Image 1 (tube, rainbow, N blue to C red):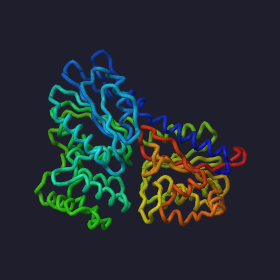
Image 2 (cartoon, rainbow, N blue to C red):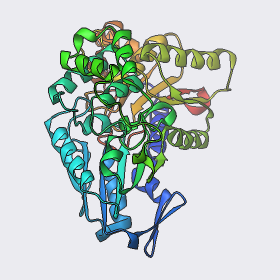
Image 3 (cartoon, rainbow, N blue to C red):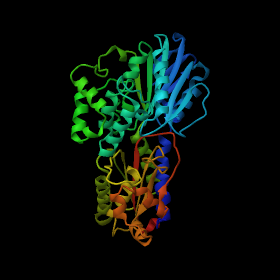
Length: 449
């Protein structure tokens, strides 16, 4: 267990404050209100008497909580609905069906859910109001391959992209071009219905066409971009030949591009981001300040290789400790975003746990420093932990326990490392998802840390 109990609890309190700021139910109700028969969404007014039916559909890890909020607003006005969520990310719903499915690699349940969502979308008419709920994880949770591409093809392609270290924008560029539902495909399916999309952002920069691969917005990427990504990471041999052939056919103009800006499908759509990583960081900063820390909100847009990002964060902490720059101690460094991990070994872990392990190794010789990095969805990679905590004693304690920190890092085995030390951070499913939060506390004796 960590050496500094106060810092341990402070880090968790700061993380939880950020989490509460992006609770989907509360976020949706800020932007959506019903008065009489008028639904107001971010300043736009919809007379519900104009519609014969209201459909609710979508996908993502926060889908169940978002759906519950919509049910609380619209109740029995909802004619039909279906959302796909990650296994165990559930709420009790009355009018909207939940389909549980696999993430980050799509599975058969996800395919069944996507088909049902697409069929409901296609049944919409110009007198239908469609409310689409989109959150992080939607790309994997609503897989509907284009003709000629199988679910197995998408699974293999997804695994190759995840393993090579491609960022989420690159991964979703390819996902959009292999899907009938992503890259504006869902907006095309519901047209000419009126479409409102409520979005919980889990991508750096809140790019609408990247969040869950943009099912309801124009796609800014092209087939040629897909080919460039495969070549950049040298993974053309790792993806199925059917995928390569489809991309080549798209480049040659033999299959249609994804919907683009100016297409009719988007004339009756409204897209609203209801919460993002930046919202979580602002509330986390407020909590850290209340706890007595001088706080630096570094950025909500941190990308790059996890180990490099960890080293840079520790360098800032070391600067604070030695030179009191850019902050005086006690200090809190906050950042968000989504880093990438290149898989080199067969270990178990995720980018947040790997960040914490890499940071712990770099913290050698420092005093009174605590790190917490965790995913806001409650699951880091294919594990049951949101992330992990570390301090300057982590490496020493590990060696006493017979663990080699560097070896665990090289084998991407951060989960087993922190599990042995009792320093995994487990929240269970949070039913939200706005990427990761990173918290580094640099203390002094007056705070007992």
